[in-house]
Amino acid sequence: MRGTANGDAFDRAAARARCKRYRRRILDMSQHVSALHIGGAFSCTEIVDNIYNELMRPRSPRGNSPDTFLMSKGHGCLIQYVILEELGVLTRADLDAYCTPHGRLGTHPDYGNPGIEASTGSLGHGLSMVVGMALAERGRGTDGIIYTVLSDGEVQEGSTWEAVLIGSSLKLTNIVAFIDNNDFQSLGRTSETHPSFYPLADKFRGFGWETVEIDGHDPRAIYEAVTGRSGAMPLMVVAKTIKGKGVSYMENVPIWHYRSPNSQEYTKAIAELEAQS
Amino acid sequence: MRNTFSEALYEEATKDPEIYIVVSDISPAGSMAKFSSLYPERFINVGVAEQSMIGICAGLALKGCQPFAYTIATFSLYRPFEMVRDDLCYQKLPVTVVGMGAGVIYSTLGGTHHTQEDIAIAGAIPNMQIIAPCDPAECTEATRWCAQQKQGPVYLRIGKAGEPNLTKGAEPWKFGKIRYLRRGTDVCILTYGVIAKMATAVAERLQAQGNSASLVSVHTVKPLDRDGIVDALKRHRQVIVIEEHAPQGGLASQTKQIAWDIGATCRLDTFTLQDAFIHNYGSHEDLLAAHGLSTDRILAAVV
Image 1: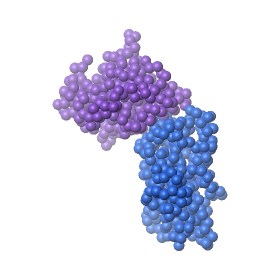
Image 2 (image 1 turned 90 degrees about the vertical axis):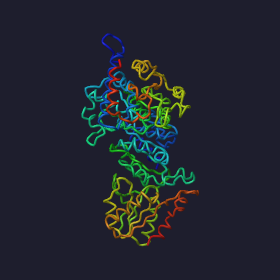
Image 3 (image 1 turned 90 degrees about the horizontal axis):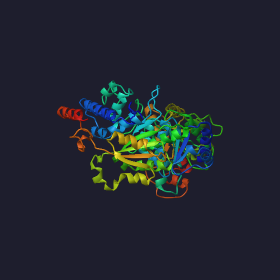
Image 4 (image 1 turned 180 degrees about the vertical axis):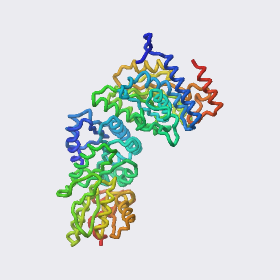
């Protein structure tokens, strides 16, 4: 918990300012490289910001937090990159060389790069790796919390449910997972293509996870969902989000899963961001 | 072989608290029960959930642990293939994927339980290492090596139970090096895994017929000891490969490739499973024979 000087437990204004900055940085990058997943990065911006800047314990002088973040929805990693840049883990040069022959960052996280705890991109892999990491912490008697963000499309993978089943069966209370429930996948709205998917939270409750549903763009709600957990079981936060959040013409429009804005669209997006409180 | 694996892993795990075994509702007998009661936090049974088994091993290894994934070979490699490729090989993690009962050992369980193409599949993935011990003693050596190595993933292809020890008195086992179980001058048999028992019988019969026969365990199938194979091709007038695997992507095809590359002049015969599923039943030997793998048929085909 970082909080404010005046004793308020959570500084919502600071979180909003950071998220605005991160979205702006991603939009700036979009003018150099077209390989982006803007929509899915903007839908989990507040969640990933909260994990790095509020929930994970600060990094030690040696550079590591005792806690871990694994981006299971690997296609959302742009938001991870811009936060890691601000934290000094990745460099400006790293981000400037994103998806270029002389760079090391691509559109999915690659293990071995600074701050990247696992290679993801193929969906349905992250949660099992999270379970393994949580087991390692338990086996050593260390208190690291393993944070992860899954996409809602990813929850259609059978492998995700294998991990859900084993995570709660082993009572891995050191797992904090989020579903970025933006309701979109490549071929349409999840709620229309897979109506049986909902209510989503009930599925996780049924498997024994402590489950909460929140507005995934409300920084305080994200923070309190985690800090207020009972800790008796692994935590699943079903976060209702908007794909492309923050730029009106991107919101809930599937093409922005992968498209980059042209210069006029970029100017409009920046103006919208700047006008937000 | 699975019991010797279990004993060797138990011994290593008592010395190294970072060793975990993650199983999918199948567990080796013997010392594994002792392992699980002494170190319950390091014996994880995920249930019938092989994709998660591999992912969990990856997560453990990402945190510096030394995990083993264990189940019947079809389910440890085929079912979670993409997890093996992405989570273990792409990230180059020191996880041992144990494929137990590989080949057609599960003869009466049918084709769903046969691994006829596992070497080709595992061997095609960058960073993957493959060890297929030929007897329980080699299985012990291989298991110890897997427990201590940090260079990347291993597919450890083992048998089931009751395999004879074939390597008594042989030169020491060394990862990545072919191992002569006997040395001769005329004919050289290259083999690996459980079918080494048949290869041994072939070597003995050849010897009895007046041929000086070498018998080699190619226990490390990847990285293949190319220099060792080249040497065998050059030193013998005839080389015979006997393997319990499809003709493509295994030791037979790789040996032919090496022979072509170096312009080998020896005669080269290969005996493998066929590129076909098996729909009949019987003993392990019956199934091997259905694809032409028997001591008599090999000898009949060898000049």
